Length: 307
Image (cartoon, rainbow, N blue to C red; front, top):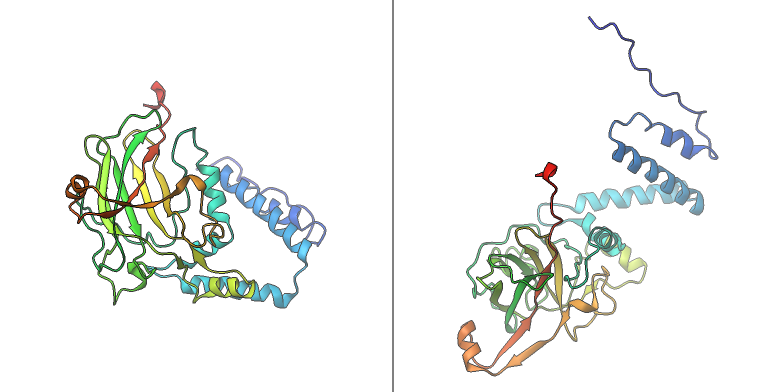
C-alpha cells in the first residue's frame, strides 16, 4: 500500500488576463516531465503571445489563420506535404537546416530536403539511366564522395531525385510519368566515385494550387525554384548530407522561393567532346556533363563510455 503523499500540482498564478497571459499559460506547462518539451512549449507561448500582442488580430483574422492552417493540413497526403511547403516558403526549413548543419571548412553545404522525397529511391547500378520517360536533355551526373580531409569514401551511398525536362516530379504526375522516375540510390565505387545518366533538370514552380500557393499569390511572390538535382550523401562514420546541385545560368537562382540556393552549390552543365569518357559513361559523344563532388564531415569520435 502506498504511504507517501500524492504529488501536488504546481501552484498556478492569477487568472488569465491580457497583461499576464504569458505567465499564466507558460506556467500551465510547469509540470511537463520532459525538460526539452517544457522549454519548447514555454518559448512557443512567449513568442506566440508576443506576436498576437504586436499585430492585434481581429477575431475574423485569427479565424482566417486557423482556416488557412486547416486547409494546409487537408492538402497533405502520401505524396504531397503542404506543411513542408509552408515551412519552406517562410524560410523556416532553411533556418532549421542552417542551425543543425554548421559545417567545418571544406565540407559540402547543405540545403533543404524539399517536399518531394516522399518515396524511397530504387537501388540502381552505377551508370544507370534514371530518366525513364526520357523527358529532357540527356546528361551525365558524376562526382566523388570524400571525407573533409580529402580521403575518398568507397561504398558511400548517393541518393538522387529530380524533376524532368518539363519541371515535374514523378509523384506529381502518377498517370504520366513511370513510377520512381528520376530517382536512384547508388553506391560509390572503390574510389568513392559515382556516375549516372539523367536529364538536365528544369526550373519549376512549387505546387501552387493549394493554400501555400494562394499565400504566395496574395503577397505577390512567385512560386519558382531554379533548376536543381537533389542529393543525399551518406558514408559510415560521417554525418549524412542533404543538399542540391543547382544548374548554373538557371532562372531564379537569385530568388528561389524556398531560399535554398547557396553559391557553393551552383555548377555548370558542360559539353564534353571526349570519346573515351563517352564510352566510360555509355553515352554518345559529345555529351553533357554535370559534375559535383560530395564532401562529408566525420562524426565526432565517441569516448569509451559511449562505445
